[in-house]
Length: 406
Image (tube, rainbow, N blue to C red):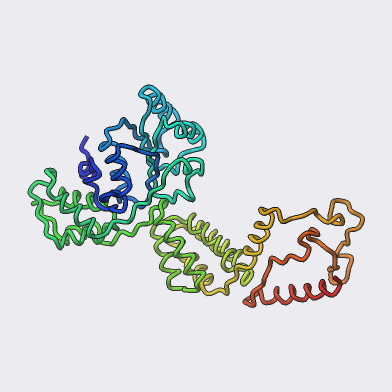
């Protein structure tokens, strides 16, 4: 099989890994593990093409330990069972598992006791944030190491190493062209290697120019892998821009997500924003957003950008309020702390003492609803913005009535 250049350039030792000095530099944690001939279960997380697989392979090569490689998204329970039997046979095994965040519950249940006993040492790899995407039971048995984004200098270092590889015999390329490759690689070294290899083999005379590179890829690559932190960074940028009422930044991040083509992620995040950040200041935004999402799904890309752009512009320029969900979070916090009490007797099922509000003027009657222990608790603090200004007036009026009869 003709392996890609990126695979042929894969490091066999930590000393050959490019970047990640905070983990593999002199006297850093992973270097010291190799020096002390000791390995613990760990999860390596970060963007694609920055060295997760390289570090995992380098560790097992440097330590000369028996290992197997699985991918959680494609390998089956049977594949895991084979690894377990081998671990039992040799009294221990290192399991390198890519896309660890996709490990299903059945496999997790099988793996947990083996990690606990030390029969299997896990090196998990993921582009997702492990604090959000990985089962806490797995996470608690592993050390988490974040890999940093590679710099342009790191990419250039890798490219200069690559052009010396025998597969690129007689290559002709100058530093300015290497610089172009580094700039459009999105700090993804694997992508840079692949682009270099394609340019080499698509050239008649093995000469690679800036113009040649631009015919292969004319636009910069920004990281927006839908399973990785980069994707969530863009979503975060969208939400924080809408929350901050910056319509231009909001449209910028929406455009990046549109180019990624993931309507579902856009819809989910906008739905959160509608209720978390705009909320009662403009409650009509929820149904309006649903209509825009339905239109986007109905027409698909590229036309889907039109309703999405319209609703995001409106959301960014809407008044903002987070009071409702903050109030609910305070109530949840009370319950989690045990600060509750018994439901008042007149609110219990079929109680004869309950006053039915619709039987009273204005459909309102003063009576206690909260338990005695917290009867005067106030979770909700309204804002004087948008539609919520009207709710605030009603809320304060009701508060005065209640206080009068207490």
